[in-house]
Image (cartoon, rainbow, N blue to C red; front, side, top):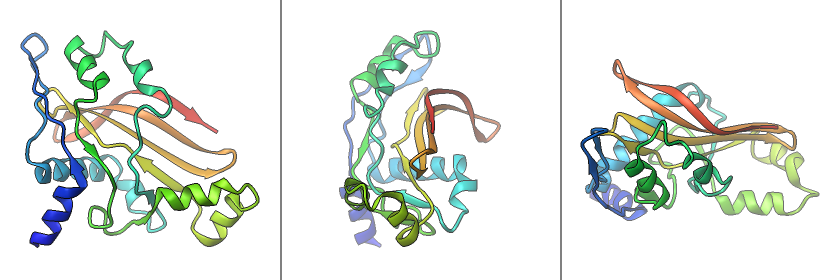
Length: 193
């Protein structure tokens, strides 16, 4: 048990900077205990993605999605009506925790595939989706690390699904915790192919 907690602890690197803004009643203090933060992240993902995670063919890439990839953060930073200045600074300056890898221990029913394997398969265009569909599965997914805001009552989370050359979708979603469940209230950087 100690080894599992040690592995979890080592797999997360926390950058903690605390900020507060009475006007918007936000608490941007990053949870110091990485084990507790990771549990919170996993519980959130299992709640908002429960239908997808129930699929025994679900494949998750081990590398968490980087918010910078689709230039989502710069688009999000224009949202001054949704987010306070402190929240936008918190997001822009990447003061939220980071995670290096999603691991099988986090999602025991899923197949986890390494980012390196995905890169290798899709580096050679002759292999591409035909090889992936024959040898691996029908699709793969990526998740970001959740970014919790406002005393953990709001959460930014990116997820996508890749299922073929012209098949896939993804979005950055803002969730609000209401009535004991997370509800998607807004989305950014939506894409579909």
